[in-house]
Length: 368
Image (cartoon, rainbow, N blue to C red; front, side):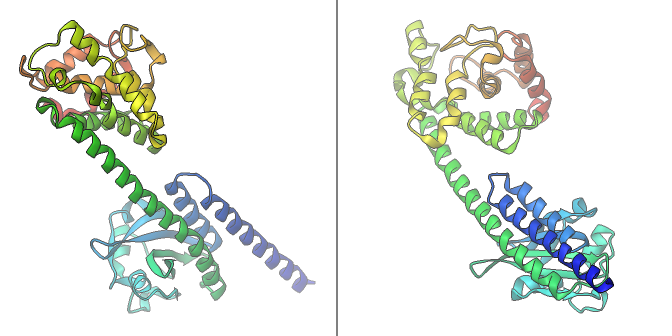
């Protein structure tokens, strides 16, 4: 009877582990943020292996070191600062040799790297580590330490290898996505730089506006996707000036009323240009509305308050601050303190008061 009960319990455990693996596979194939997927994968590994800690280490190809990308456990913050050479520790050995390892007496293993324990004020007793492999290439190492009940087993190792196979594709896809993202941003920046090269007085404007927007976005605690849309919008906010004649764009004095009217068309023109690029359609509302005013007296649609897209309200503050603090042929730049005072004066009329309130303390280095 006891034997039957034990078999039933073991089967139940195996079924539960299978369910967790299937659930993890579904999660990896979802559209969730990759950092969330990685953390949940390591938390699942820690649970499945009944371990005190779990981690994902990835290889930095520039330094040939492992770094802790994800840690599930109390030492997470401390381990984020630690680097392990590919010739150091069990993890380094696994990364170099691409062979899974079980070490149930860590202290007696000659490969054991005690510096990690010292950095984290932790005692490692047992280790199970598997290479993170994608198409024969080692991306990093998955590791769990200190099994809570007994030693790590071959069954644990087989399970960990299966989990590693699932996670590796997600890591590689995330790497590919990041490479494509960087290439995309590079192309967009090159386009913006080409536009700026027409006007010698606004050199660096796009990069500065992007920096200011990032500071505001961070202060507003924007998520990764929203921050990306904001930064793309900041880079492309003046793309419509492609359609403005050089005689107006590069004029060394104030614009006439007619010239100002032509210049004000650039936000609409920018939206038209971007409407033909599917990957940039999310930035169109901000590009279109970055010259709207909070009181409804802006252009092109005289939007007011929260009817103005949030990212456009952010760009309006960043864009105006940079314009005020940059020399022009017909006027000297304001100091940062003077520009901040002007933003506060126009808060609630030209600018969103909440954005102004976040902006000023977000960039203290510009006030010095």
